[in-house]
Image (cartoon, rainbow, N blue to C red; front, side, top):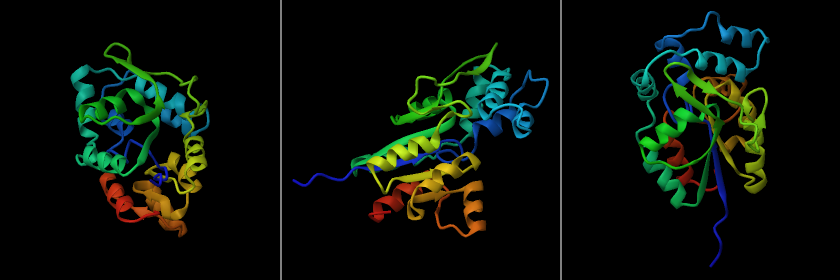
Length: 221
């Protein structure tokens, strides 16, 4: 019997598999012990993207209920489990690539019974210390500036599947999205607006499960 060709989908998490970013909700909704704006430090070039998140997340001061509330408000696509199952049954390998924190990503996926390959920054939460991010120095995709090297993950995927697909929503997703074929590029939010403004083709989406439907209805992408 002819072997089915490997297909790979690399996906961002915050704002892509979910409606909202943990970063935005945490800054808006959770008490913070921070005395200054870490994000502005990053924008001004004084610290790295990882250091900005590390400072913001580490300054969170809330209880477990507060953290659970923010994770619920991220609004994971309710059709995600079915979409993942359909793709995996069809032979797709799904990789989550995130510059956020694996702590909340894995909890949200576990909550709906989804098991995926996740590359993200490690972290641990406690009410007294906030969400403490650490650099994934042992990861094959470690990058000092962001923790996780999204473009590196996509390049590795393209070596296995020249028609590898990428899905994302934000500025950190621009570089990895630009590596894949335009017809294998899915974008929403800022990333979609950017490609639209510069006239670059892409597949728009509102919910992650729409990506699965598109991929399963046409081959190749």
